[in-house]
Length: 183
Length: 132
Image (cartoon, rainbow over all chains, first blue to last red; front, side, top):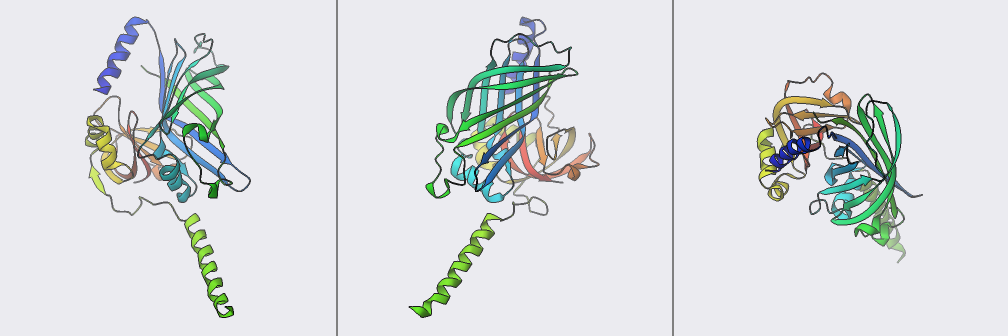
């Protein structure tokens, strides 16, 4: 059913807007970093999906929480079970829009600095965020790159006082996704 | 009191050792492990499309063994990833490998058997920490 909607959306979408182009990947790389003097923790997800609408500047990202890989098994276990409750909240999503968007010319290679704002949903809680990012056009491929900070407490994730020195209150999130045009 | 001190020291040493072991315990591996569930890629995708909540309860964190045809080999930031054909244009089963070397020699169209931990579904069902 979902797929039918997606197919319909694409078909009708393209009728409507003429050559409205969407860019997309299923293998976007999203990572996050919690750095404290005591411990550095990083999680990496290499199967995040991203859709970018070239005509409107709308962007959507989605990641599976259980898809984040850590150096140490124990970190991954705590991340999933204690903090993110990934069985209850399996996905993190971002839906946003490039501010003051002018359609990107994909025929010219180059870098474009953008400001993106939208809703980030983690652990079942949605917050407005905005961040700066870079879109790189490279031979009709688009790379989206952004770094932003997330306050752990904003998303209802509580850190026990016993480990409060090991886990940063503000976590840096890095997004790096190369998108191909949907034909 | 004094005669307990050696025992207490041994307990503390054991505690530190256990803590250190826990901290460094290895990741669960799919290589050589027995699969919890063996299913073909199309059925796995269908289960998630039919009822995601139910499929999550059934498959998440389990070792899933899938046998299917390689639809594409994807470029990823670290390691490697293979998409398996499900007969569906848009959705496949994506299998992530921690090391790119694990999928050296795999070609599009090959018939492969892959084991991995199921992490859920976005547009595709995703298996992580896979082994061939």
